Structure formats: C-alpha cells, structure tokens
Amino acid sequence: MLAWWAGLISWIGNGAMFIALPVYVYSRTDSTVATALSVMTGAFATTVLGQVAGVFVDRWHHRRTLIWVNLALAVVTLAFLIGLNLPWWTILPVALAQAALSQFLGPAENALLPTLVGEHLLPAANSLNALNNNLARLIGPALGGVLVARSGFAGVVIMDALSFVLAAGLLLLMRVEDGPHQPATTRQPGAFGQEWLAGLRAVQGQPLLMLSFGLAALVGFGEGFISALMAPWVSTTLRGGGLELGYLMSVQAVGGVLAGALLATFAGRFSTVKLLGWSALLSGLLLAVIFNYALVYPILWPALVLTALAGLPFTAWGTAQMLNLQQESVPEVRGRVFGSYFALFGGAQFLGMAVSGVLGDRLGVQIINVDAMTYLLAGVVALTAVGRYGRKHLVSPQPD
Image 1 (cartoon, rainbow, N blue to C red):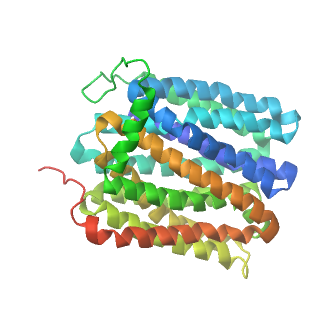
Image 2: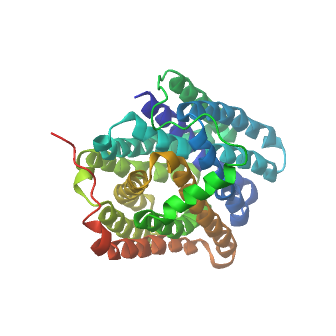
Image 3: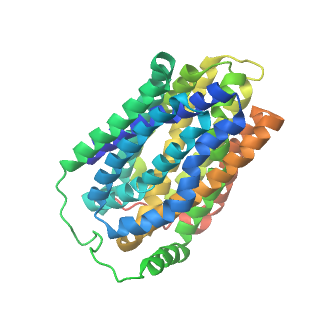
C-alpha cells in the first residue's frame, strides 16, 4: 500500500512536468527542434545510464534506493526555477540531471515488487501498478495544464518537487527486511563490468526477453515522435495549447484506469505474448485515427474520446511488458534486466526524437504518424510469435 501510494504521488508530479516542460519550451522558442531537445534529455539519460543504474539497483536495497533518489529528485527539480529568467536552453542541464536520477526508479520499483507479493499475485500486482500509473496520468497532465495556464512553469516545478518529498516520506514508513531476493551488500572490486555483462547474458538466453526487447526498440522509436511533436501537433492541428494538451494526456488515463482494473482480475487468463500483440495493433489503429481526423475536422472532442479509448490497449501493452520481464528474469539480475530494457527503449526514443525534431520542421507535424506505424508493426511481430510462445507462456494461475 505504501509503495503504491508513493508511486501514485510521484507519478502525478511527473505527469504535470511531462506537459509543462515541452509547452514552456515551445512557447518561448516556437521551434519543434527546441521542443524535441527538451524531451530528448530524458531519453539520452535512459540510454546512457539505464544499464548502469540496473547494476547498482541489484547491489543496493531497493527501498532505500527509492527513498534517496526521490529526495535527490526534489532538490534537482527546484533548480528549474533558476533558469526561468535565463535563455531557454539553460533548463536542459537540469532536465538531464533529473532524468539521470530517474533511471534508478524504474528498475528499483520493478525489482522490489516481486519481493512484496507472491508469484501467483504478480499479474494482479502489475495490473494495479498500471492502475496507479493511469490514475496519475489522469490527474497529473490535467493539473500540469491548469498550473501552466494559471501560475506558469514555476507552479509545476514546485508541485513536482513536493511530490518527490511526499513519495520518499511514504517509502520511509515501509518495513522491508532483507530477504533471499534482496541484493548482497558486498561485491568484489572490479566486478562491475562482469555484473553488467551477466545482465545482458540473462536477456540473450531467454527468447521471450529478446522479444520484449525487440518490441521495445520498435515502439520506443515511434514514441520519440509523439514525445517531441505532441505539443506542436496540438498547437497547429487542433489549435490548442497547454490546457488542451493536458486534457488529452489525462483522458488517456480514463481508459488506462479501466484497463488496470480489468487486468487485475483477468490478466492471469491470457498469454502475455497475445496480450502484447493485440494491444499493440489496437494502439496503432487508434493512433492513426487520432492523428489524422483533425485534418478535416479540427475539433478537440473526438481526440478526447479516441484518446480515452486508446488508454485501454496502451495499459495492456505496458502491463504485459513488465510482467514478461519479471517472469522471465531471475531475481539476482532483475534490476539489470529492467535497466537494460529501459536503456534500449530510451535509446530508440532518443533516436525517434532526434529524427522527428528535424523532420517536423521540414515536413510538418503530421510526421507524428510514425508512432502509429511502429505500434502496428510491433503488433504483427508479437502475433507472429504467438504460434511458438503464446500457448506455453501463460501467467501462473492463482491457487485455490
């Protein structure tokens, strides 16, 4: 419960900042390249530090890692205030530092979760985590849009910093003893490289882990386009601003909340590979409609409805990926597996942001459709693998 609430509060702050930062940069520069640079910092940090963070997470106590990283993030986030009266690019080092620290959160949280629940409850626990994240997406982006409109970027900065402090306080209340799956406290000198390679070998030896990694690279590239171009797309195609962007990001969570609740009950009845395939296909189809209907009917409400529906397959996709990584990796290297996964996703996303930032200025914001195409292709790849893996890799049923 404490971990769940800590994640919810922290994610609310992240959702607000996800809206505020690109809106702030685009309002100051009117450039998709500058907007892309502001969000590329996160993907760059994930690519460079994701695997390194995974090694340390496997060494450290997961709860303590989450506490100290949240406190450090609160301090770094406040540094955004320094750049408000300086050239816009001065916020980039702060965004990079914030993104670098955040690399420890995902591996630590996902490695901690299997130690808090039994194997038979892991599908439900991941589904409830997805519910958590979507509740935050429902609240955070809308709150970020409102704060940007009424109190500016500074209001979002202060709120985001407070969310990290509150999350750390809740995690401090947890009492988790070192168990058989907790990392050892000592390591031989010079073992860092060997530990990192051991994590990579753990992925190479598991076909379903390789499948998840390949799909992450494909979808991550497409997600780079939407990360960099969503704010310009809303501004030019829907003729909106930060408030409208906040609404769009929040309504996606409506479908996500419903999906999280349903998956908590029914996730154990489906093959994770089938869930990956069908959720990716549905996500791609809905994205294609969302990105293109406004060319002939530039009204906001259809985008709100369609984005809410898209929250269902998006949540199913993310839940299936996290569950597959947890089930197919052993506890001793789980942090490194997640670190490598996030690093690969971030690298692909970084590449997508760089390409979309350049093409957006040259070809227009409709190049955002690349995101829909990558989801469709990922769905085809996953469903092709169902015949080989889909039947024998089912979620463990809950015992009577």
